[in-house]
Length: 527
Image 1 (tube, rainbow, N blue to C red):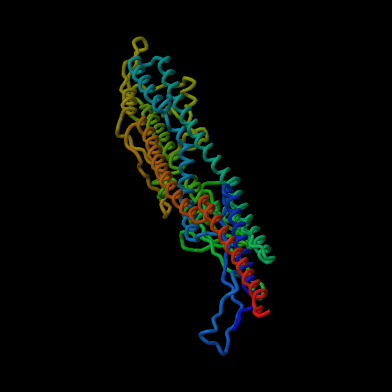
Image 2: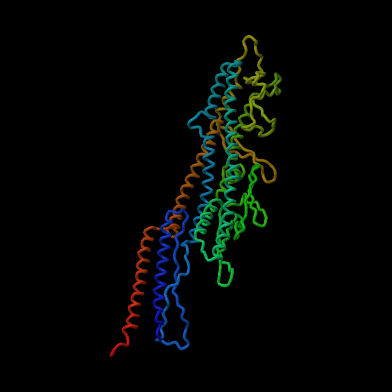
C-alpha cells in the first residue's frame, strides 16, 4: 500500500514544531536560572500514529507513524527528594528554635566579662568576715546589708530578664509564628484553587506550582507534613491535579491541614504556663496538639516555653528550668540565712526570728522565696535588729561589749560550704510533692552550674544545628540536580534541539525534492 503522498511533510512539520517548542522551553529555563523556587521544565513528546490495524495485514504492510506529538510541558521534580527535604527542614526548625532561645538566655547567666552574682557572693563573704572581727559595728552591719541587697538586685534583674525572654518568645509565637503559619496555609489553599481553575482552562499553571512548592517547603519548617497528589476527573477525558497536606502527630493520628481549597488554622493560648496550641480543621473541630508535634519550629518554641527538663520529667531544659533553678538558689539562700539569724532566749528557748529576708507578696511556707519576691526585711533595713553575732545567750557588758561571733562565722562557713543541697519541688501524678535535687555545692558554684548547663546545651544544640544544615544542604543539592536549571545542560539542549530542527527541515527539503521528481520527472520518457 502506497503511503499518502504528503504524509512525510506532516512528519517533518511536527518534528520542526516540537524542536521549536523545545527550544522555547530551554529558553524559559535559562531565563529563570536565577528565579528562586523555579523548577526546570521539560517538553513531553510522544510518537504519533493515527493508522488503525488492517484486517488483512501482511508482513509487507509496514505501518509508520506520522511524527511527534507534543503532549505537555511538565516539571522535573522528585517527590521522594521533596518529602526528604521537608522532613529534614522540620528537624532543622526544632534545633533552630532551641538555639535561638538559648542565645536569648545566654547573656543572663554568662558572667565571664562582668561582675555578677558570683562576684557578689565573694564580696558578701568578705564583708561577713570583716564583721566577725568587729562584732556590733553598725557600719559593718550596714555594709553586709548592702552586699545582700546587691545580690537581691542581681537575682531580681535575672528574674526580670528571664520573664522578658519568656514574654518575647510567647508574643512572637502567638503573633508572628502562628500568624505566618496560618497565612501560609491559606495561601496554599488559594493556590490550589487557582491551579485547578487554570488546568480546567488548559493551562498547566507551572509557575503557580512553583509558588506552592515554595510555600510547602516553608510550611515544612514549622511542623512535619506529608503531601499527597491525586487526579480528579472533571469531565470526559479531562482531569485536574488535587493536593492534600497532612500533619501526623506523635500518637500516629493524621490531621488534614489542606484539602483542595479548604485549610485548617492554628491557635495558641499564651495566658499561662504551659502555653497550649490547638488545631481547628475546616469543619470547626478543635484538637490540642501542644504535646504531639514531633518536630519543627512550633515544637522548638513550645519546648522553650513549656519544658523544664528534670523538674517536670521532660527531655529538654527550657526557660522553666532556669527559672526554677534560680528560685531554688534564692529560696535556699534566704531560708538558711534566716535560720542562722534567729535568736535564743536566756533559757535556751527560741527567741525572735529576726529574719534578714521576707517576701514582697506575703507568701510563706515551703519555697516561699523567689527571685522576684525576695527583699531585705524592713526591721533589718531600719536598724531594729542586725546580724545575730551569736546564738548562745551572752550577757553583754555595756562598756566592754562582747566578741562572741560564732554565728557570723557560721554564715561565712555556709557561703563557703560545698555541701548545700539545691532542689526543686515537683508534683507527682498522685498530687504529692517530691524534691528533685539538681546541685550540691555552695551558692557561688550553684549559679555557675546554671551557666555551665546552659553553655553545654547551647553548644550541643549548635552542633546539631550545623549537622542538620549540612544534611539539608546535601538534600537540597540533590533536589536541585533534578529540579534546578543547569546552564551547561540547557546549552547542550539548545544545540541538540537546533540540530533536530535543522534535521526536520532537511527532511522536508528532501521530501520536496522527491515529490518534485515524482511529479515533474516521472512518465516523460518518449515525449
